Amino acid sequence: MLSKLDLKLNRESLQITKNHYDIIVGVAEKYKLDECYNSRNLEFKNCINYLKNKFNKEGQVDYIWDDLLLCIDGLRYSIASVLFYKKLGLTPIVAGYNPSNIDWLFCFFLDDGYSRLYSTWNRVGNFLNVFFEEIKNDKNIYFDKVIDKINKDCYGNNYYFKLKKFRDKEYKIIINPYRNEIIHNQTSYYAIIKNLVEKSDESEILEKQQKDRDEKPQFLAEQYQFLYNSLENIINLVKIQFPNEVNKDGV
Image (cartoon, rainbow, N blue to C red):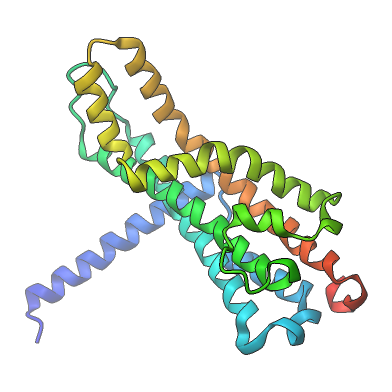
């Protein structure tokens, strides 16, 4: 049995957790990072309800879509945390840099945000894979690969164009290389420490690193907005694939 002290600590921990969660959600709302799962779920299911019988074997489509939206909401929490810790104040990156717990938490959620952003776009690839014959049952269903395998009838379509433009620019040039670095080589926190050891007397390099660090939260927030708004492009890309099967529920 739990002692009275344990019960007291549990209640206090739950309250602290709730307070922190409410703060982070408040930050998300301030930066207009809209919650995704509850607001976009029915919208999708109503839009392509007419395809349920064709593709939704054992609830496959529902599960993949639900997972995608939950990933987006997890990304929202990570990005809001990055913005929160940046607002608390980060230590300037200068010679004699003495990072605080806030700096570490900022870097932790920053890396987590980039990792989640990358993996969430791969969920998009997984979702699109269900509907396009050219990529169906293909094991290589990363977003990067799926975009190239969508049938050519979609190439002139604006929904497809926006997704491909993002893939060729932000995804390939910024998001994936950064994610690859923190997953396979070094975290952003360690990169700062290492740079300070090796180049502590090169102020221009340190200034550039600080500027880069301080700009990343805004980039992540913008990428969240793009991903959130891209759900409509993703839905419409599926809908135009089956123009003859649209019924009143799909309009």
